[in-house]
Amino acid sequence: MKVLIIGAGVSGLFIAYELLKRGVGEITIVDAKTPGSGASLRNVACFRSSFTSPEHVILMKESIKKWLEIRDSWGVGIHQNGYIWVARKNETIDVFKKLSQFHNSYGVPTRIIGKDELKEKEPYMNIDIVEGALYDPTAGKMNLMEVFTELYLRVKKMGAKIIPYTPIEKLVVSGGRVKSAISPRGQLDADVFIVAAAEGSKKILESIGVDVPIEPVPRHPIVTEAYSEIIKAGLVIDWDTPGSPHITQTSHGSIILARDVKDEPWIPLNSQRLDAIYKIVKPLSELYPALRYINITRYWMGYYDMTPDHHPIYGPVHPFENLYIAAGFSGHGLMMAPMTGVVIANWVVDGKPGIEVAENLTLERFKTGKLVKELAVIG
Picture 1 (cartoon, rainbow, N blue to C red):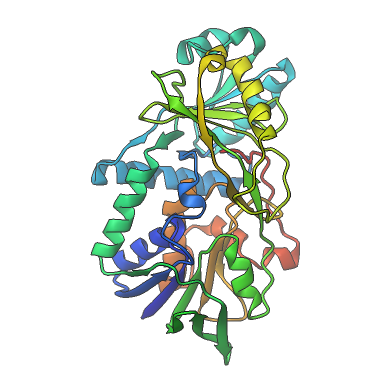
Picture 2: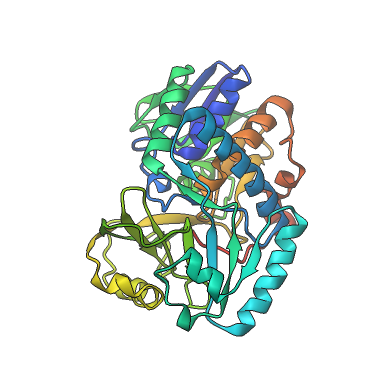
């Protein structure tokens, strides 16, 4: 079986990794630019299963198991040091209690913590302005460049051919099957085609009359100089502030701050939004007063490839019997990537994803109206 994967981000690489483990030996991965140059490496590099839909909770819980196996077998920097969802309002604690009950019903041990425990976990936080928090002990963060590089090298060593600077302009179909992909380098033929090109998936599939409801929405993470440890958790989220500002600290000490700042889809990633810095820093410096004395070195833009229900689009693309998609992760592609590899590889090899809830996330749901809503769209 000859497989062409379009997109050499973390999803495309994990799909190749799982297919190679299953004995699919002829795999080519192409990317419009370089591997990981899209959302994969423009990322705060955290993971969690504390979501608000069964689909996300189940798939992310399995993905965390995979990440921990990868940590132990690959020897890469993956740290299960938790997420903290901060409540500034007392009524938010009641919301968190319901969320925790929902998580617990799926085996995710989130719980409510009060101010005293919050201060123990985050000694630099100003707990005078908060009421408590939802704590997810299974969540965490990773050394993104280390993990991505190790994945890339393993996929290459296993035999995949990875070709950068090869944008796919269109697909060619005949008799209900995709026959080839056309790029400036020429025609690429395969038996199976997998589109994992984030927002680029939309244009590629439009070439064969398939509408994919993905819009790339910009995000604006801010990066500081390296400092001693201020943020202990993998990620801290200010739930009650609009845009849910969130903060993490890398293994080398830089602090990353981000927030949902309203912006227009599809704007170029070299655009400047200097007002985003104030909007992001102000609420987080209220939570962590030490931030007022920290120097910002840079900020970057990256896309969340958003779908209408904030869930990925997985699986077969009808009516084409040899075409699959893995895109539209709405900001959660990295944390979900190991299971993306598993379910897409299963679909290709076995004809089904292996995890039942993944079948709820096919492209067909936008035709039938069976959308799956997610409320917690954060890092």
